[in-house]
Length: 116
Image 1 (tube, rainbow, N blue to C red):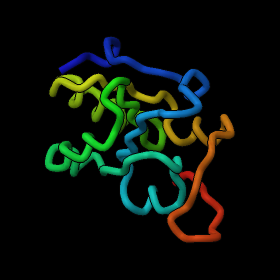
Image 2: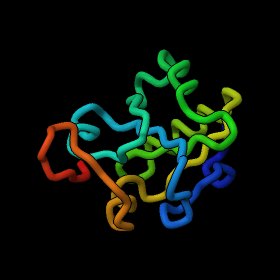
Image 3: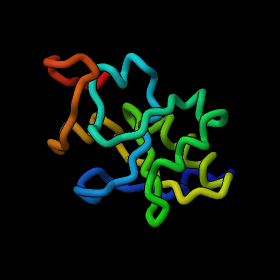
């Protein structure tokens, strides 16, 4: 496993604006409250059994992994890197995503997206 100091990490402000391969590993209720519109959602605990779903993401770039604050996504990114993926942890998670003014949607139509 990759040590935390060796884990590739990116700040939200440095992420591409378009075409970002984003994996959200938060729980269903967190996802429903607010998420990045183009993100793929696989809760951390389900990642090993659903890793084949990552084939939906572009293969020519890293998979950026996000959670609420960066802890779960760091574990997911380390696991993905150990499994042969090119994964990057998003520092500060969805909290930073929201503070940077990146787009968010809620699962309920008309609801105001929020970070939980």
